[in-house]
Length: 282
Figure (cartoon, one colour):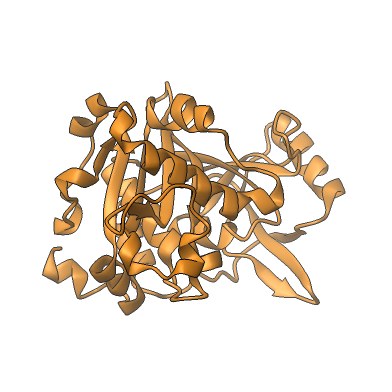
């Protein structure tokens, strides 16, 4: 990794890069379109994994296991065909992993198929899909920290995964969808404010979903990895994460032409979660 940039990154992220291995998982024709020399970060040849390679079946199964123990408890696990049709072939997956021999048995039991101590296991993933506009859509972001903390928690693993994945995929214009009460907002909003394209989304399985637009870039990503938390005092109003009536009200205003953005990380007070919102575009 570029030592000049490395010296500016918070120690928690240096630890992850030192101890874990990055990987890229996609259709083989896509690899040449990705930026694989981000800040000098080395991705081993064997960690460019083709979703068409049947010999890497265990990796497919274990990626699905990572998704299941990350999102299964909230009712959003994916079938393998969703990974393939909606992520791997049209876009790509970036993440960090390690060999099975580096993890204790209580962690390994969460995965589906481990043939040897050398089995490479995914510990995080960021799935991004290109859009016809030239922008990308962030489809999935998760890490194994919910189970890793029994052994060794890699703090900031999900943020680092999305940040470096965005650079690998050359993403500037980024769309995403998440719920108003999702803890992932703490990650997404570290990288950029979020312009609301929808505040209430009946087309989604969870209608209390935000569709957002953000712009990323190397300077923003480096700032996020320096370890300071993004806070904001300059907002127009707060939206409580369970206030369905306000969500619908904002959605109606957006459809009538109003523009809003979530301009900072969630604010926690009185056992509630609030999002700071400001009028206008990014």
